[in-house]
Image: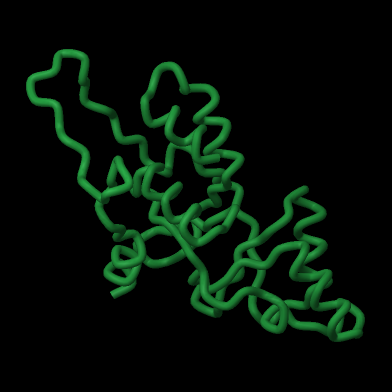
Length: 178
């Protein structure tokens, strides 16, 4: 069920190459065209995923971010399933809006509810498309049980694209998008 919902999020309309909306023509028997290797998200993700729970305080989430030197953590429910992301900006805005100390505000009050995620065996192109379409900078990478195994950021994609821009046509496309 989770896989089907995730697959529906990744579906997109066919790409076009002009203003009239025509599909690009495929080149037949072109020796310059070589098959492109599809790199999986698992090759780029940062496996040191930092977590907090919905019932944790914002003080604990902020402490986790400070210790990990990161700007966002994955929020999990009681089963360990990724349900949201919380950023340092979310914490600041909640503290300002609610006017209470961070130790009295729960993560559930400040985090973005609902999360856009990718599976570890999705392609980096699919992850980039999702991040661009939903305008998010980080996505949790989940296993088949929707448990987080890492985080993929636009910075990770940029580093890959910059390193492989000349070698991989996909790297050029990523660099253009980012």
